[in-house]
Amino acid sequence: MLDHSKDSTPTLVQQLNAISKPVTAKVLGDLLGVSKITIYKRAAQGALPSFRVGTAVRFDCRAVARHLFG
Image (cartoon, rainbow, N blue to C red; front, top):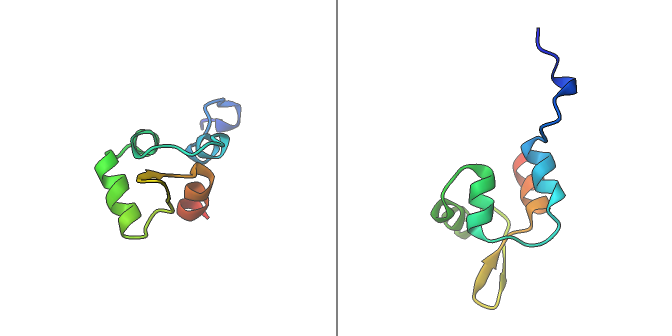
């Protein structure tokens, strides 16, 4: 049996929670393993929390982690 308690690789939730500044769709897509187009589509559908800074769409990784993983 594998003991994952000694694994120092951060989980996706830990990675998202460690990012305190807003990120672009490209950065969030890279973290989640999907394209930036998918991120934009999910944000437009309300499936991902996002906000605008002028015309740019940005994402709070902590809010995304709460939304996706509770």
